[in-house]
Image (cartoon, rainbow, N blue to C red; front, side, top):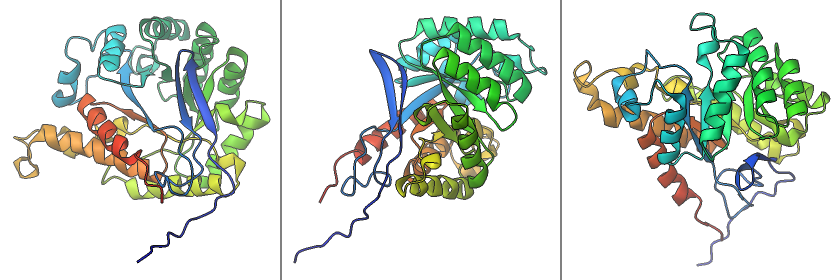
Length: 316
């Protein structure tokens, strides 16, 4: 019996963003179909995966996570090299030391550290601030200058600080993460504001804010799904690739942090915690995520194996 496959016909596609410089570039986006439906359209670029590096040693990470980076947690350069050894497509450098409650590092100190990390690895960088909007604007402006022309991804730009960060990206040749708190209208509005400053849409990556498995993942999923459908149906201000900063959400959950002894009924911690990060990533890949920032190298390994299978053609 012949089987007829009903196919959607989309009128637009997700924009493609290029990160880094030749010969070490990473391309994200570019899809003309819903995730992994190769029989309906093209998915030219596979989801990319980054591992996270901090510019100061974390004090609240569980041992199951810190053990994967034993000996390098107080050396961001060595830590970044370890991430590349683990197979990361990009390194995500979080400048948490800039936070006033941490070291209150200056923009100049952060920029020099970012340059040292960038010079030590052959993959593009995602560079995040400390989460204090005013300080992030100052820090990322200086980082953009010191790393001029390297086409990295800087964030997160919000409604409050996007002007400074956008201007820095325009002048120094970088891409921007536009971050909004799980609201499709705010997401679209921020993209409009950034493009009105003349940063091209193909240099914007959307951070819609995400949750971990069991902690708001269904709401984040729906926002991402609406973003992808908006892109495919012709809304140019929703047609940017989506970044999922999921490691920071997963590894603060009690399911990931509780030891086997503390929660024996949940099973062995290492397997449980890695699966928590893996399943979160798998869900967001199906929602339309293009770039994933993870923490545990085994999560990355298993997620990559999953993506390998999903990227195989299912054309009819």
